[in-house]
Image (tube, rainbow, N blue to C red; front, side, top):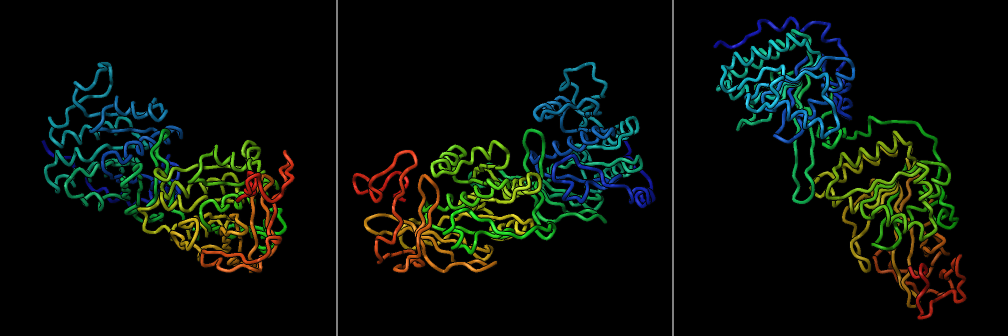
Length: 533
């Protein structure tokens, strides 16, 4: 049996019609952005990846997008049966009605004797006959979009790289002569990745699956080449869930510039806003650092709540708390965020550090900013994000790109970072002060036999701020900031000591529900429910 050879494909490949054609949408969320519009029209694209990386799903989405646009699609499969493809589609909630599927599988694998497709055992045929049958089906259907799954079967039948290359080139040329846009899938089953396919493909996309030491596997793709067509280079995370593949383009802050009205966000606590020189500025990033339990998250929620009350959209990315605990904690300090959540002004994304990828994290933030119009973003906490990205060597670079993007969108970003330990000398697990425009530090200190909190602003790029140390308290009615504590020492070393008069410290204020007669201590010398902290 002779091999199939299509003569002189070059004249078509250089035709001005094909070169000027608009890109073909991929049908995959996020991938069109990476490819600057989609796949090049009337070209052959190689999609390669190990088994289970998502190639079949990617191919089906490409064909289904064509069906939605009234374009004929053909799925040629040598590795999976029609029944298996239907099962994949059913799990994603898709219908393949109207899609042509041509399968080359053993007859005993089909239980439907009425199928119109021919069932051939590829291993019983010469390579040339297999290719000829595929070409005949293309001529019969005359598709606009084609998926060929997979080239590994052609590789096995070829039994040699020269013959393999010649037959793939024949397939490719015939596809292009019929004005089809083609995805050729390859599962990299050869011991050494065969680079012959790269040189004869217009574009090469590789899908990868990375399995961390703990947690769910993470998927990513990168574009190895695209001839004469711009694209976004580098690795791009993607997820494979019900509904198909969704790609998260690598965030490049330089590509996202918007104009916004400068301004300052006040939280409504005069003393706190005074410490920060009037509040937090729009288009800036603020870092709140301190030990666990000192009130970092509540301070961030105070500024978020003030923005929500003004009718602005907000986003909370929570790594450390469940939604229920977050809601109860906010209500316990007088912050009713539930009504804003129900009205749609507030969006809370709870993330599991074991399952999230950097792309998924960035994608959710971009959705909230570009779709919902979020003007305040709280990330609580960066410690949880670092746990999620422990295998990522460029965590600080990713955060720099993210904060720059948010700043350019005019978003007020609040980062929460827990330092190691609760008392004594403390260090942050990562230094993000240089990417932050404002740095607020909270500390515990002891005075009069009670544990109290101190607040100080170490840095603010966009204006003046107090260089003082003030007491910071949280009770059932919200946030409180006291007078400047002049008799303080050791705050920056992590061992604060207060040598001043107790009268200068904040006293407990009565609960709005149950007045308290003793404003300094409970029955055993301990402050009431929210005053001790």
